[in-house]
Image (tube, rainbow over all chains, first blue to last red):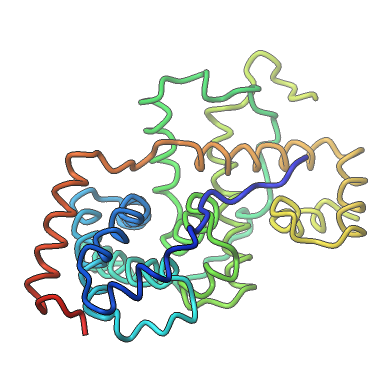
Length: 208
Length: 83
């Protein structure tokens, strides 16, 4: 069984763009916006689960990054630094919308069932073929929405955006064991919930 | 190795972040434990389906509007100098 390959590769000219932007070259900063606006939007919408909030997060995160470029010490990649700003903005908006609930990245919910698989039927060979693209998006959106914000944030950074465990820990100010623990539980909880939709109906015994 | 031991290592296994001996022990477990095989396989599919989905793609027209707004705010916040 193969391993999961990361999705994002960083182009080598990024340092030059950051230096130019720091020196006041707005077109260099615009290039950085073009490079990462889709990622920031996706992360923001995964966390806030709200389209308007995600749009605001994109604007505010890039504006904050621009205003604080001089403080960016370049000990991490620009993208990791930007993600850290975007996650904080997104969590702030989520807290505003759900003031009744404590929303924190430190949230580490442990329940007995969250790592113990109950659904062990294998999936159809190609689950994407069971649903239209619209239906599939709805299933994936609804499913991830049910995870605690701290779990879905780690999952989206690691598995959707392809940050390494170390970069995710850095961006979220979490320890590496904390990232791994949340990631495992996020993956298993999503798997459990998606199994309802994707399990192999033609061979319900789930045999290989 | 028990199923519970296997689950603890699942994330590192899927990420390929482990030494050869542990990997071999996990793969030995997968040979005979059908439940862990299914959990491992469907967890991998879970990751791939989210990674490859077009969930929350930024539409091009909105993308253009956001970029214009960002650059205009940046220009407004401190001329051409971010510092």
